[in-house]
Image (cartoon, rainbow, N blue to C red; front, side, top):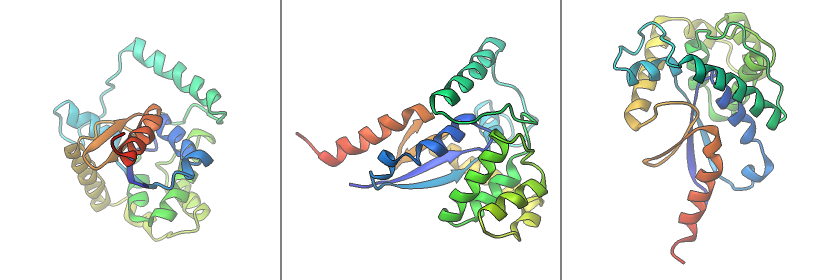
Length: 206
């Protein structure tokens, strides 16, 4: 039985970048599930977890040893998945405009736009907070250029923040996270467990 699976992500997450490629795997596609991309802000999620206001200034939540591990881990995983990876410039762009645009697109267009933004950021070291970069990503996705002006307005920032607050209320605390009904699976390394869980339930009692 196929399932509808929400995929919560932020372009700034390398693990979300890996997930975008994992979901292109033919074995995953053949399962017939509906993957629904749900953009959220990492910064807002981290602030909510720490009890801060959603748009409080960024605060690095990682200790020096954990940050060193994450950096090494990301490049190991890129090699494992045979994916190109460059250190982003800048490391922490304002992703809210890109996330807002993604949220406003239809699912098929959103997927194509996601691919373009992930590649611009993680492969080409482009600053995805810039209108001209997002304009090129929209062109690659062959979709709505009129969203650019809206994406950099205050209303877009408020809307994307509210979307993230709603996700946090659902139990989403990081990205990427897969959600099916009331159950969440955090991390790109939980994809196999997610698929196994769905299939076990579909099979019913033995």
